[in-house]
Length: 328
Ligand SMILES: Nc1ncnc2c1ncn2[C@@H]1O[C@H](COP(=O)(O)OP(=O)(O)O)[C@@H](O)[C@H]1O
Ligand code: SF4
Ligand SMILES: [Mg+2]
Image (cartoon, rainbow, N blue to C red; front, side, top):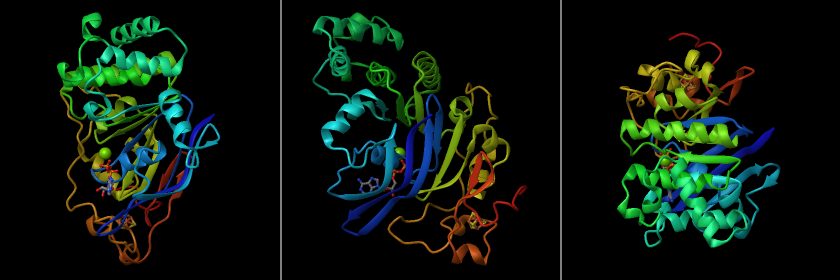
């Protein structure tokens, strides 16, 4: 069953230096219970995509177009009250920096309890108990004491767990996690991933996992979307992408990455540096946005923008040579 359907989503920021196309004609679907990873270098439009889907951007400063449907319901035309209900309920959100999502002057136990009460009718006392249960479940030691502490009293890893507890207390059908482990050390990172996995099993939540860590993708994702300069340039099952990457950009990213199913331990799995930089999204590009960095670029690449083509039933690529570049 399709849970989230994104079609031709574009997000353009109006800036003092002109229009900035952060997301360009992005289409993808997430099925019930599925984990989809969105991967790409910094600035490729991953966070803006997530924020656009959840309508978290200041829309007086940007233009959204296209279609976003959650279980058939149109989100781009939903009003703020409806979106707030969806965010607290059907969709859980985890961001890289928990301090921006947590209220600094409210104890963490109370914040989780309030999230619970938004979702379900219960007394304050019941909600407080539920918050402690959730803190226990996300592996916070001494949860009764921690519940009475403020966000700044907790370590980064613990704040991230609190945010996960808040996101999951409502058993969201969809969890959007934007670089949930980037700021954390490897051990805590592995624990957080374990937690997301076990909660996925318990609640059957689908996950959109935004990351630039391909080790994390290998461990978690069913399907992978590669973004470059605001566009989806490749999509496939995790097996397909790791075994048969087609886009030169994906191949570059995969240069030195742990294999599918390998453990994160002792490996960083960071994206490989690819020579050159992401193009300025204020400048309209003619042709393939990756051409200036692509070793396989030919004349046609600088003249015409490659559209997405399906190379297999579970694999799409936007490259003029997608069907030819099997090796290289
Ligand atoms: N509020 C904003 N106003 C203007 N430009 C923005 C804003 N947020 C992000 N951008 C720009 O949109 C592009 C995509 O950003 P982002 O989605 O944050 O990238 P990623 O998450 O992939 O690193 C970048 O060029 C960034 O500078
Ligand atoms: S379309 Fe051309 S420039 Fe773009 S990725 Fe493919 S080969 Fe490289
Ligand atoms: Mg980001």
